[in-house]
Length: 257
Length: 314
Image 1: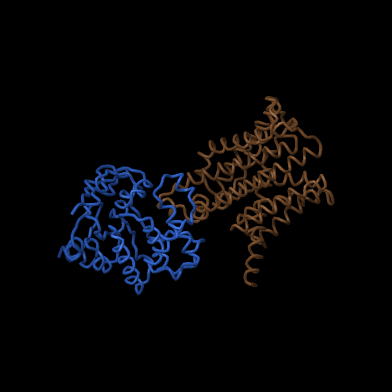
Image 2: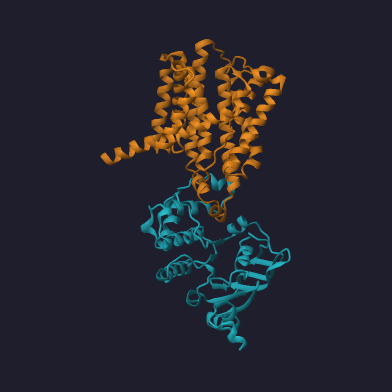
């Protein structure tokens, strides 16, 4: 099993503040990794280093055989690392279909000028857009203006837009945030089966432990900028430090008592 | 879409055919109006992406002065060459200032472009060799060796402006269907998402700036030939403001509206100045107010409404 993403000794400091340190891990292709941790534990810093929005202070990031440490974010996107957002990032004044067409056309792999001067609505982009709408089961909303969508559909559209360019790795930032308790499992079922069918490697940041336990193959627990537990959900979520510091299933006083 | 292109071509041919039968003042007015319509077309390209420059006269004046200087000092008189150089000069300046302008948005973008145009205005006013505040005349032009005079020259210039406008309208409507052109609304809506899709928003805006600057230079070059005179007012902020005014009047929805709006604007101005001198500013303000209140998407949206109701009726 070869790793699609390898991170070695990654560190990020802002002045004297250490936001992330000693992060070393391999992610095999098609694995679904849940990332947990309290606010400020370094999850987002980790994600931002992989997508190229933060340059690591130390360490290396490899996509298969290629060292992408410090690459500009757009180049990393073109190599196939895509992301979705905690707050859905869509184009509110376009319809759902137009959103998908824009995302499909923007994600083309030709040279910059050739790509932007191609017609937006080519048969290829329309095909990709419609396939992604089907995959994420939002075709019924095809002609609805994105600003009027319900929250769950908005999230699905955001993730569909990240997937339509056929990335290999997808980073999901809190896919269930802002979605009601009743909706969240339904939305995650649609998302995860869609991502599985596209054979994507997925890293998702999530605060909801039920979601993590159900959908992750592996859990990374962040605390104070580093990984304190890394393993199968059943093992990682049962780790006493994880229970005390992150999931809160074991109160802090209990561990000292 | 093709029927719309055909309709546009038909309108341009009709205008060209009717010109010899029209009164001379109307032909001159239409020549200036369509030359300015090119500038407005450039503003439409930017406005779709949410950008409104208050200094587009910078490029207009560069196109105009390039033509005037070459015809006066180099003795060049071929209009095709002069207009091409005027447009190219403005396009190159747009490319250079674009490195700075493309990084700004909203009011900062508007004000920075205004500042740049006022610098050019200041330079033109203070430079004696460029005619200072009076500007200078543009020498008579020729069309591939043919040098008409009087009304024949006016007609030739009108046809030239019309042909350039038709080509520009066609190219811009094709541009709006490309990825770069169609991503204008996404730029306005959500830059973060576009960046994460692998698109450089700044570079996209830079491209739009060069397109709009070239069109403004084209308009300025043609206007210089049509008026036969250039002066620093071509770079002044009220000139830029006039272009923004017509852009709001026309709306960003339609390529044709840029030219129709520009024509109506010039027509209204000349009639108003004739009939009720001194009230032009008041009329201008009232029209702008009414447009914003009742036609927020501009004249172009009227075409769409008519079309939609026709579709419903059938």
